[in-house]
Every structure is written in C-alpha cells, then in structure tokens.
Image (cartoon, rainbow, N blue to C red; front, side, top):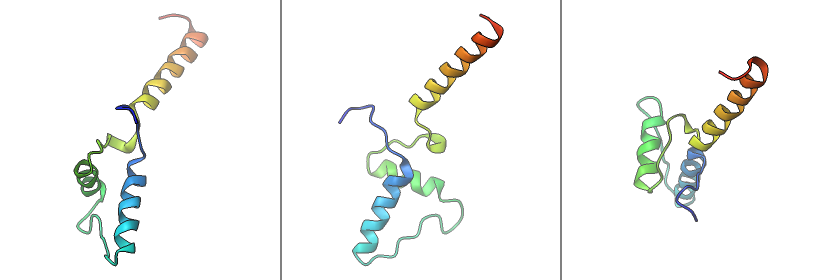
Length: 78
C-alpha cells in the first residue's frame, strides 16, 4: 500500500456500517442532518483522510490538465 492510495470515502463508510450490522448493531449516520461531517469524522478515526466532495485530488489535477490541453488546442497557447 502506498501513501497516495485513495478510496471512495462512502465505500469505507459502507464497509464499516455493514460490519456493524453483521454484529447486530443498528448504526445511524447524520441523524441530525447531513451525514457528510459524521462520515468524515468516522473516516478520520479510521486513519483515512477524507477529501472535500469525495474527489481524489489526482483526478482533479488530471481533469485540469486535460482541460488546459483542450483549451490550448482550440484557442492556442495563453
């Protein structure tokens, strides 16, 4: 495993919840509103660093590079 390995944060939360259900628990996440922050707290407790919006920064960088290439092809260098 590398330091840059990433996971969909909801997959991790789902895995934890399924395990708790199998143990006879009835977990609830975000009963007082949006589940995003409680899910992020759960991930941090497990040593997983959540990314805002669940987007992998490498994907964002790749998309930005593709967009820059497309813009350069269409409009020339800036």
